[in-house]
Length: 260
Image (tube, rainbow, N blue to C red; front, top):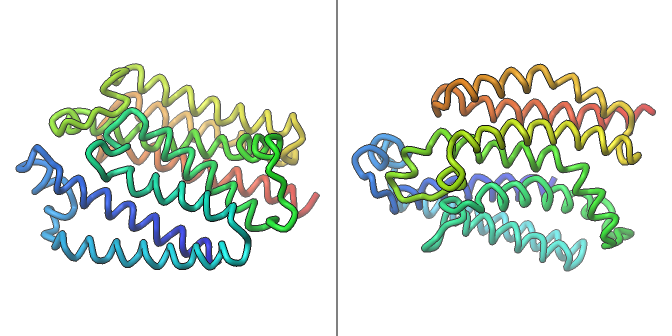
């Protein structure tokens, strides 16, 4: 519970920091700064936003240090990595979000490292840092990694024109919208392939294969984004895929662990 609250607080702080930095660094002041970014659109004090996000970050850090005291130093290194990615995702002269590395770092952090932290917190007294164990956690978390990456990719696809005006060169700038859409679909396919492979390698119970029932839903959302890339209309497709895909994977995996 302590980790969940700390993670939630820091996630909100990172989202606020993202909006705060985008507001201050916007080149397109009229359209983006005043009409798109929530700080300008809702006339929120930037100073107040910074104070609130700083408070949330400090509280999350204190809670994290408490968990480090209880469980050991490995959590500190993983936590520091997460904090670094969260802060530099939108901060500094070249934020990660404005580079073709944004999808990679955000998905690895939220999809893999947070999953690894959860495993560690529940087994720190016996957890072994062998590559085999890390690979197992990675494979189990791979669907989430891919769907989180797709969430960021869909955001960058929909924001492509706006990002170009504000000199944010995301992966879409380098590979183009067409190839980015292909990558989006491919990662959805690979997510389900990872679920099948996890069962085949005996890392997940057979009930995890029931997550494949989500394929028609994911396919429908995928096609909607392929047809139209409008933030207000189809970005939610990636959100729905992540939310539903993650939920059904956890549900089917948990059923197997609890009842079989």
